Length: 323
Image (cartoon, rainbow, N blue to C red; front, side, top):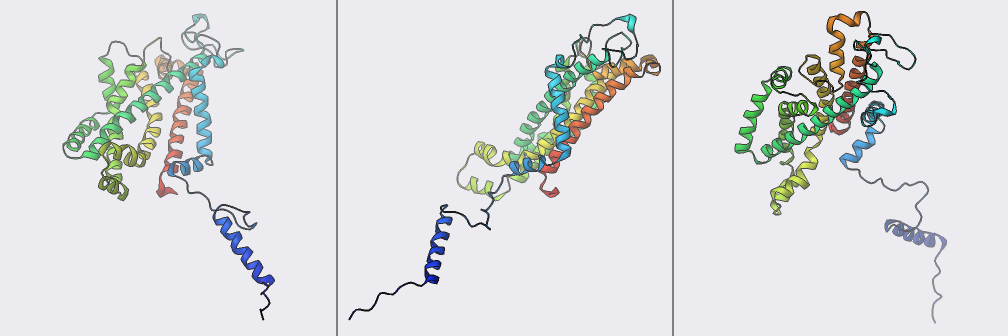
């Protein structure tokens, strides 16, 4: 006599259904439980830094101001319709009026127009000098830190020599010997004396990165020097260089203005905030017309402050010790 087949009770059926549902969810199928969220995907260092930057008000304010400066540097005619070199001596030192919001300087030039066009010079010098310093310093410092030996010894002695030359004094000597001082002459001088700082930071960062386990494993698997530098060391050693270069960008803008103020920087007809500040200080003209000094100085200060704020925000986002 055959027995009656066993019938699963409601508890057993629910248990089996729950096991199948869990298995389907583990394979990415089926609905997820209402009270349970899927695990968050791990972010890389760069995506994590961008996540923090988007929520940093300092970065947002600095970014908006820098975006505006870049915009008027590329298209100054958007907010200034006059020629910065068109001057009328009859309106020398006139105060602000309709259509001339910042008044006129000692040569009768519209101060507002010159302030707008001066942003192009400052941003061009700052960005190009920073790129040159970052590339040259990263290459020399990275090679010295990776290979060591003679490369490292030569770089250390070169950086000691260049660190002994003050930037202002070096600018007075170097630029005074050049015939025509254009934007690219000033950029070349800044790159010539600015690379040692980035080189030392890149060297230390590469030395630290190449001692990590993943680099040693790549070397044990037969990876070449070029592959280890580009795939393993460079992505993990470039963050300190980016932070240093971002902060230095504002410093280079201030350096260009300082050299122009001292008379060894940019020459006319190039429009420069430093040259306008220097012209305003000659003969103490700003005592009778403070606007010729106030507006170029304010534009220079805001620009340098914006880039320094950006550098601080980037440093906070990329430095794991500050999290």
